[in-house]
Length: 264
Image 1 (tube, rainbow, N blue to C red):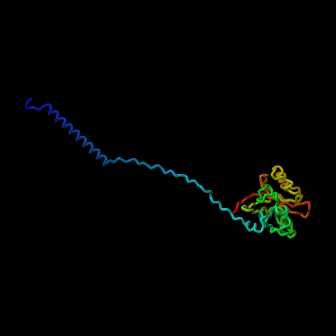
Image 2 (image 1 turned 30 degrees about the vertical axis):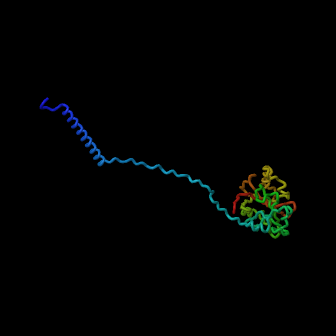
Image 3 (image 1 turned 180 degrees about the vertical axis):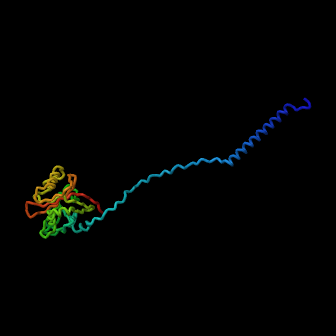
């Protein structure tokens, strides 16, 4: 049609204006988003780090145990005589002597009349027989000593005949290489002269129990027994044996092990 717009040209113009409108709308939307982000920023989520996992430390060494020194220098004692196996101290008495055990080169009861230096001496020494172990780990270790008129050796044991002394003096200390053994005295009494270690099998609980019953319930008129002390065949004891002046009797002092302290 002359004097009017061509239809195709009119459609083209519409598409152009439509595109321009869309572009303008997109620009406006983008500017709006930028303005919103500027004035209202989006918080970023806080991401926490995972807690550190501690690796357990494996202890490779045992804690250090500080042991007390042994008051007896056994190395020095053995220079004098290797038969010295222990040392005994009894507070409240003069008893502070080595304990010996004869070797195979001398008779069993050699120290009955020999000093710790092996010289001949009427007072002898405190000693144990070979049937007992030198570390005092037998159920019953029997220690022999003379009842000397001058008060030496085991003469002081007769003090335990007195109830007051018995009540106030309870402990015996035996020092062995590497150990301090503490015994509580639980009985003291006159017994017959039988050889105790040959008369009882202390590895047999029934025979050991029978001996303990005799110690806890002596038939002798001369006796002291400590109240409240519980003793079983699981305990280790020592028997201190000395003469009374009568050939058919022995005076016994019994102690039960209550502490075994390792030493340097």
